[in-house]
Length: 471
Image (cartoon, rainbow, N blue to C red; front, side):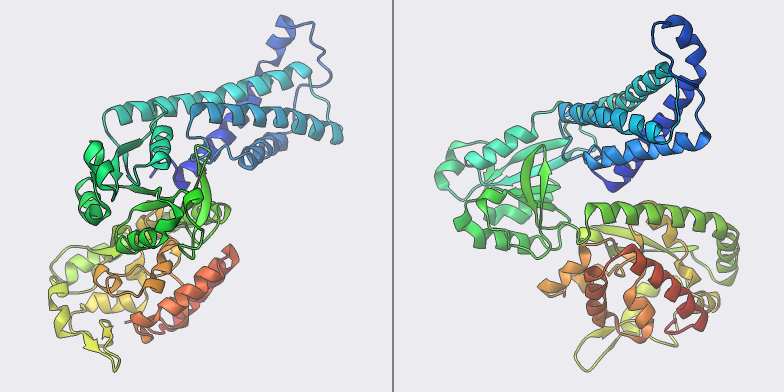
């Protein structure tokens, strides 16, 4: 989904800029004869035609400069003025860099063409940003897609944060109020909704999306307690760094929101660059796979309907990245109402852990047996990947009741997108009890790279062909 500050929107912005630059160069080239007549005093300086490859080179080079200047980082460009300044700066660097590229390539083009190209590209890149921000402003004025912010601490730091967050007219952040344990503050300020003891109740009732902890360093234990209490709630948690030491959470990172440094205690375990590459990889692979597998999925849907009564798809609530719940999609491989019969087939191992998946499950249908054997019941999850709910490779999404039994350290597995396949699946699959998969997930998170993803995908094909652990 193209939500503000999301990786999907960053990729969408990159695509729009690349297309804008490509079209700008094409228009400048087409308009060059007219420019020669209108601006005869400009030294034309050479040929006006560029080899086709330079259309792609110019687009890639300028987008790369935009990336280097954080033009696609929505948090750094919270205010429109910040985004405009970065666009102007990238334009200056692009003019110098592209002119240098032409010089070293010994390719002389008309000066009017180059100037027109820069001007048109800037207008296009700035124009679509104005349109998008206008759309956001309209949406937010109708209270749509608002991110509701609760601030812990109503002192000077908390008030300054609230002031900065509320400033831009196209802001999608709505400050719902503060929590503070000081009785005097609670009694004298109407926007203080309660104490930290009321945290869970207010977060649920007010549908809070973002929690900002603006407490003094002496309240470190309270902040740690707040983070722990919300471990099953998909709320983004920021801490003002000048008020806390950085060791609150193993996966914390400092990020800038409207030039305000904040500690994200639920930050992903992979860098922003790695995350963008991973998302681009997911979008490309899932789109191609859906197109290629469409005939197979249609055939499977027909066979499921002929084999047993019930829906084609099985939808199950799972816990995704940052403990965000979502509905995972699979082909139905069991009889209708199989979840109600789960207690009749679940077993306990010698350590008291639940083993809910085993061979010869009587709930599995005839067609379902073969779908599971070949692992093609997982194909509909490609749509989860396309929507950004899952990744191709990552920790397997868990069921909520299992996550509730997690120990604190196990929550680190949710600092990365959950996947269709992963290290656990290719090293054990169903032969290994699900409660033992967290160590494999930790290995994947600590050693993540796009090359590891490619290796896991390759191993997945080998495991599926052998049918190891599939039941």
